[in-house]
Amino acid sequence: MVSRVGCAPAARVCIVAPVVIALLAQLACSIEVVPADEATARAGRPAAIEHVIAFEDALTGESLTVADVSSLGTSARVDGAPMALDGEEASPDGAMLRRVWRVPDAGNRYALVVDGGDARRYFGCSVEVPIEGPEVRRVRVALVPRARDVSVDVAITRGASVRALPPAALRALELRPESSSERDLDVHAGRCSGEQPAEGSHWCVRSLAAAPGPLRLRAAVPGWGLAALTADGTSPDRTLALTARFEGHHLPAATVRAGVAVPLVQGGGAGGLVTLDVATPDALHGRTCPLDALCARPVLHAGVGNLPYTREYVLTGPGARTQPDGATSGSLWLFEVGGGVTVAPPGTADALRITALGSVLLGARGDERGDDGAVRSPATARMGVGVDLVAAWRFAGPFQLYAGARTQWFPAFGVLGRDFSFLGDATPSTQTASLLQFALHAGVGFEP
Image (cartoon, rainbow, N blue to C red):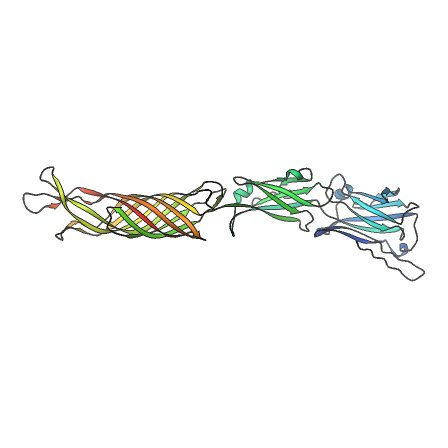
């Protein structure tokens, strides 16, 4: 509390009554009392004190409207007892008040009190003022509004990494008072002006408490639960931005993997695979998911690779008889597209990924030759199908180690072999043989 008193020469005493600012954190209501004019700025104890009171918003400095002023109660007290009101009136526009209180015989100071009134649009304020001084006093009252525009964002954290929820989740968010503050807060969707923005989560929060204090709220986020939020009811800002935080899975937009593949069935050594998985975001959760939930997202898949193969030829005939006719090895180039699902299980700190994929394959190979060097099956490209199951462990930031199993099948990979002939050399068969491979693959991945 700061008092400021100034005195003129001996024949005249001038008092500027206390300018009192009751600091409330960053924002303060204030009541400033000064002489109405030089003629009234004299010493002595008046029989009555006239107050000309103007009100303004402590945040914007704008004068309060008639509706605001009419809901405000003003009183004067000495040692807790009310001073008798000797006259009152409002300005023609109703936004300024005139009050005259009779001064009691006892006491040197009085409390000038502004109450928020029934409308409770503004917090009240009070100040201690010396009785001795001018008979007519001009009073400027700056009041703290009870209503705030509150915007709410949702941040999903994983360590130091943070992701925001999409607009659909913010539109579905509900803001309500904490149970201990239900009687102190009134919360409505939209801005206090009545505007309902199409994007984001906006709320009007009005305090019903007797004095400014913390605004204790809870945000109900679909799929995530409740988050406790606290806003500073004494903040000088009209709009308060709050953030609800949850721990969750951070699913990548895309995952690139490169590794070594070894076919165990109809294989001919080690090869390599490079794949790309692109995840589709969820409309409500985006690329996040609650940490304690089994999080599954569809993925689109593409890949390229090279796998060696070995397959047996068959000599057919005469009649229905068959017998081995040697083997051939080759290199199979793979081009694949498909889709599947990626799952992030709970309880792994968002480190484990399990992906199941189905793909359409285009396999290209060169000429296949027998032991005699003759072409058994000419170079060709064949369509097939493949199924993959991959488990990946994120070990350092976006990097992961993975291991997987792969089955691929080409129903018409090449000629079955040769047909026996009594007329001379056996000729390539018109029948085709399939190629079925089962392979294990492992390597590193990157999920930006």
